[in-house]
Length: 192
Image 1 (cartoon, rainbow, N blue to C red):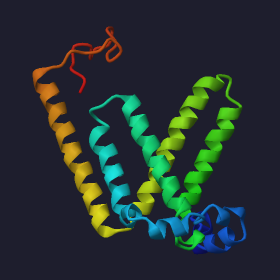
Image 2 (cartoon, helix red, strand yellow; image 1 turned 90 degrees about the vertical axis):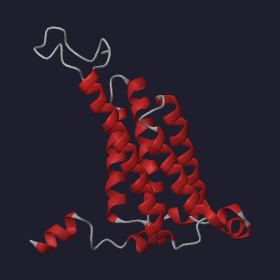
Image 3 (spheres, rainbow, N blue to C red; image 1 turned 120 degrees about the vertical axis):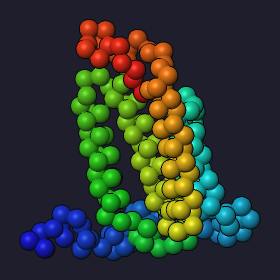
């Protein structure tokens, strides 16, 4: 039973060996010498943490278009970090990365066979941005200090959103037309 569980969770998978023998090794680190000479890239992980904190702090309060712009900035920054990485290519991949990539692959196949491809492509693009945010977070949250700062920002923003939700519950809020079914027994209830 233990070996079956280890195979399912990919514990015995050697990502380093797989990366060293794949073409992905050429994508990690070609800008390594530029990064060593760059003053700004000395602060690469803290800057990535600031980007993640910016996404978390603004997401509940701004439009979806601005969130998309922030996610594209995070994706571009992750790409820059990956291209200028000086670590061994397989040292940053964990089994959860492989499962997330598998999930993305399934979404690509679902998009390819979708009868409504334009909407499916839009959803795939959003999913890809969130997956790249996950990759950036996995990269920058290796530092305990940055991880604590990101979690603190997340919890503080969640506290503000919770207080706003409670205020709406007690004092009411104007409901959007799509929020509540007018024929429902909960039609007069305020949705937070």
